[in-house]
Image 1 (tube, rainbow, N blue to C red):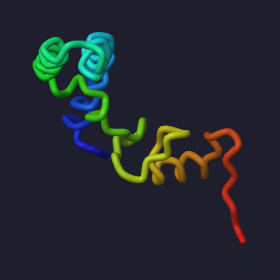
Image 2 (cartoon, rainbow, N blue to C red):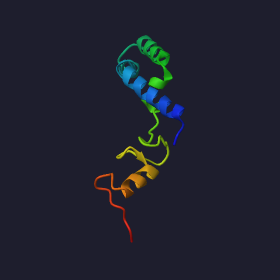
Image 3 (cartoon, helix red, strand yellow):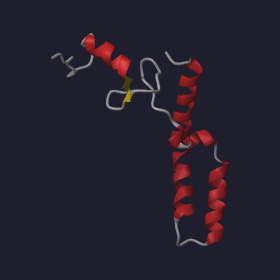
Amino acid sequence: MAKKSSIEKNKRRRRMAKQYSGRRGRLKAIAMDKTKPMEERFAASLKLAELPRNSAPNRIRNRCEVTGRARAYYRKHKLSRIALRELGNKGLIPGLVKSSW
């Protein structure tokens, strides 16, 4: 089980990324547009830098929904390998079959 603080921190980052996504997208579009004057692009990049760091979507860490584990994460199931195996053995994940040979 991951620390509660790291799980909450990641949830806060998800909320902030969702909250600032529109503003961040507009500023990035202006900053990347080569047809706009250089001063306007620079001002947009300065405003972008003023936004909170945790509002950037690349700071979000994929974590297991059950345990909060950050490593060995399966995106399709949103679970770590350990939680996936435990729930799969109990038959709680539809379509998942334990293989044996």
